[in-house]
Image (cartoon, rainbow, N blue to C red; front, side, top):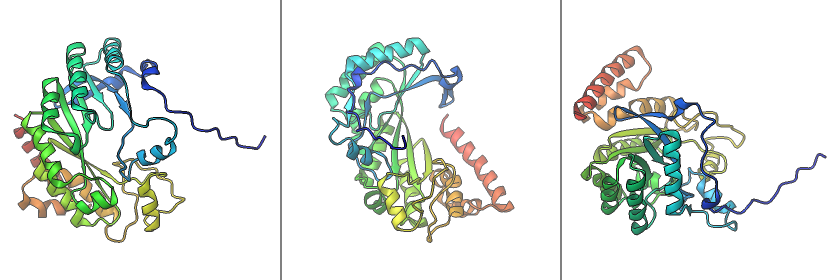
Length: 323
């Protein structure tokens, strides 16, 4: 009738019991991805699911609570299962590059990681990408990744402000540890990209520039910058509602890089959009050019002229540094 029957959540599944991934429904064009000037047939794969961390902008804290009595939240496939599935996927879809989309691929103990990577390079033998967390990225793990074919690592900085990172995001990495992790990647010749978030509660232009300066010290091969999107059910959504930056009834329609959604008194959406589009310039162009970049943040005709000139300069610098 009109009653809603809400079933209890199922127990979390053993990943080894799941069927192999099937991507037969996807158009073949979805497999192609450009990386460092080369196009690969790439496929995303998860060796593990779940994350033990409690970053406030993520859904993991909520899911950890929901599934607290439903089994182990952080689950990993066995080595044999993953290798068998990867081998199958490589053959079936002619994969030239795997992207491990685990929240933190190298969170596992070093012995387990070594066995997985050795088996991967022996049986799969195609380059791979991973994403990880600065505290997990040791020099030993960096050397293993390089040895066994890791092409690129995505590692989040999120904010260069210790206050935003620790108090607002609940991320525990120090600036020193973040810098060290990026240095390990550079030492072993692994391409590394940084992830960053702007438009955060309590954040001003000063904190955003701290993020810029930390990127300048870390020297990632590329930097992405997203706007904070306080999704329903995340801890940071409640904080944003309590501060009056978003209403409980508001439905978010923007993507991470579309447009800021918070209405904050200390910095406008227009200012955030301007910083986002010029963020790579701030990270890689000389400091003396910052006043030119500040002009390019705007939307006037002169701002657009400055932006075009800086973009050309940035492109030339990138081309020269990659030779």
